[in-house]
Image 1 (tube, one colour):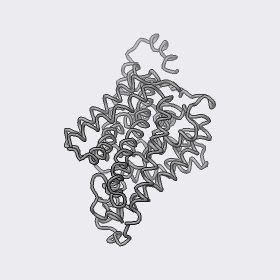
Image 2 (cartoon, rainbow, N blue to C red):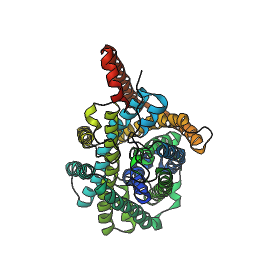
Image 3 (spheres, helix red, strand yellow):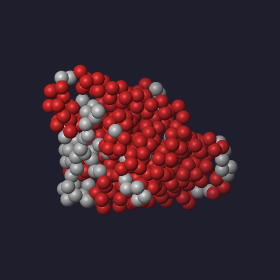
Image 4 (cartoon, rainbow, N blue to C red):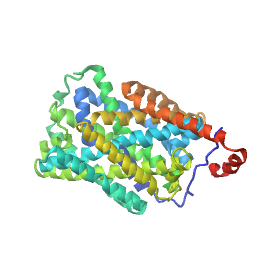
Length: 440
């Protein structure tokens, strides 16, 4: 029998994140470095029909975004989705959710850094070894800014997100005059299976709605700010991805390299345009890593607080706290995954698919929790119902990559069984004395 955990919350007037910074965090977490890589991967998988994949995943993201916004406003806690699942479905499901995000989604960190590094090195004309070196360097600043806390990382995030949006505008405006609508035919060169693969890849693009929930306790007036920031991010992200994928297909056709934005800007602004894209790509990479590293660290601290990781992790789980211990572990995980990417030849697609599959698993349990936690019949509840069904569709598209969240789920079950066995062997008086500590 588990002991309930009361989420830690911040009063509505003490949070540091307002509408502007909140919108910037959402845009950075959702738009992110997907713009630097996904136009290539999706075009290769589905050709012009990749536009359907973008539109489909964008449509799916609306109920998902609305669901997590509704949960965050009602339960602002550093545990994010893991907290919601704990409240609705119990400790084992919450533990699995936390592990999926902390250990599974974190696989995407080296992908983000290496994608940014590819652009920087492409501008300089360097080698693959230099890509690895630059990628490792790009992992460091977000760890430092998050160790300092939101007083520094917040303003930095505003600047980085502004650069991200400007990059999209620059690329689209530079390449749109050269777009050729005849490139949209044949529309389905790889059939509907190609669209399914592209959609699975684009989960990376539209994942992120859950990431900022770990910072919900830091928002000022979360009931008003979070829904508004979510709506702003939906519009910005949707327009950005649809416009980028359109120009990628119509201006470049089938000749898309690993640095598609640089290819696009070369169409209209060769030379100086390449330099601008490379520099902003590096800046964008730092912004995305900053948003996710903060979320990972907050989640790690909350998992320690709730007993799903060692108690040593718990420092900084409270609103306003800086989870430096969990941040250290996030750094170790990120560099370990980075080494694995390098050891397997630098192919990013398998790591993208592991990341997105773990995200789908998080979405599935998170939306199921929302069905139980939100007021039945409310707009948020209906969004949660739709999100549940959409998560099952995305899981079906994931295929064998589901083995990763399944394995982490089994670890969560084993950890729960070990904890129950340990409690059963303890003296009765010691169990009773320990209850208040675990209830806090």
